[in-house]
Length: 323
Figure 1: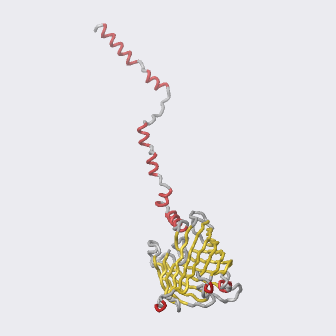
Figure 2 (figure 1 turned 180 degrees about the horizontal axis):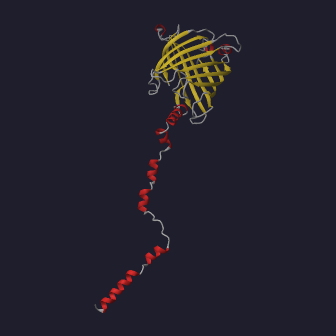
Figure 3 (figure 1 turned 120 degrees about the vertical axis):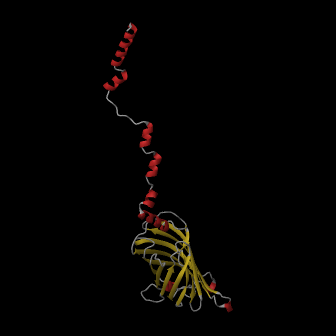
């Protein structure tokens, strides 16, 4: 072996035996845990987009996992946020009666202050007509028209949900007249307060059977000089009791009772009593102003302004339009 080969062999041995700088650094310093690469971290940790897709939103939670929240939101929509323009009192077209062969009424209200608050302001209008439809010899005349505009404030004791008990108060101003002049003129203006009581038979829902009681008290602030006895006919107010069956497969049945008396004493003079039975078909929630059947009986005084001091007993039947 030549000297050149021996020197190369010695150099190779020395190179294998000497530790390198990188290995020495690994032995003398504590080993740090291996950090995943950026690509690995992205694959293991969910991205922001993935987190958003996995975590349901509040609305999604109500729709998917909380039926009670869905029902609650539906009640809010139907109770607090109804249409701005909607039915107020019953809208009907009835046949019957001795002289007035047809009586009809249309009534609407408009929300002047739409909001989710407990206080809302409304303007309302109701008109009733008595029509001798079959009196062809006299060209089927209208015997009387009554016009009744109102402005009122409704105060809910709790919002946005329904509740058992005393749930709302109405304070308003009402004008009612027959639009005639001189001797035929009839009219009065009132400031009223109306308290409502509700009891639900079952879940507190618009679809449940419910009893509603309305007590309306008023003060007459103006009356037509031709009718000074409106105090005796109208009295201090009226009471309305209404029971609804709730939504059933056969539709909704509703029984109403309206009672009032004239005068400001305990005597039952100039009294009035209205009873009614209404049936709403089961598809009423799908079609606005769906016609239903209406049976109405009225006994006593003050069904119309011109005959406030004449007793009027009549049973009528026809249709009404669910709002």
